[in-house]
Length: 231
Image 1 (tube, rainbow, N blue to C red):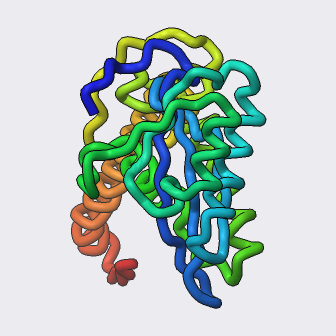
Image 2: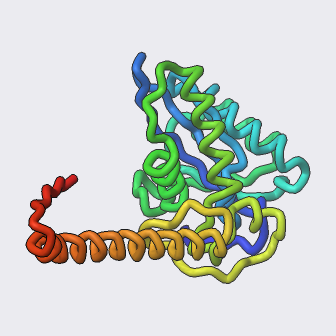
Image 3: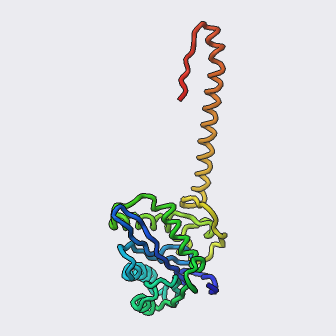
């Protein structure tokens, strides 16, 4: 927890497991996230909390990074999966240094917890039927998260953009909801389009009000009666 912040991709990976409900029961999502770029570099959806599911996510991350991952730090909580002989052997084989929280304090693995929340609260909004469908939905969610979602902490760049640039975007600490948009101009377009829609709606209400007020006078002048339907 006292280690310096990463200054480039693949210097520090953070790990966590979260549950996903399906119509056939609970499945589990293992994530490996790069702490510098916030890019999800490895993921796997598995049916149980056995170590094999966590290993699959780690292996995916190691394959993707290649030699660049060697010497990096792997940080996790003290879950039995990460402390197992099989997992520790995999870390050693990949030349990753093991780091764990002091206990079960979630604040010592806050970034991993944050990424869990983003995926579940912003992307995984449909209840999957089973494990196979959950894997498909997670693949899509991870792609959107990495490619499309800008972060305030990344100066409104996406994780993939920062990971590929390999340099700090000098962003800010992220707070609250972040728009799911590919870039700043898309976010600006969203606000402009929303404002225009509100203005158009206001103009329509004003026109309807003017017509309502003018109708009695028109009816008196012509001797006709008016019937209004309010929708």
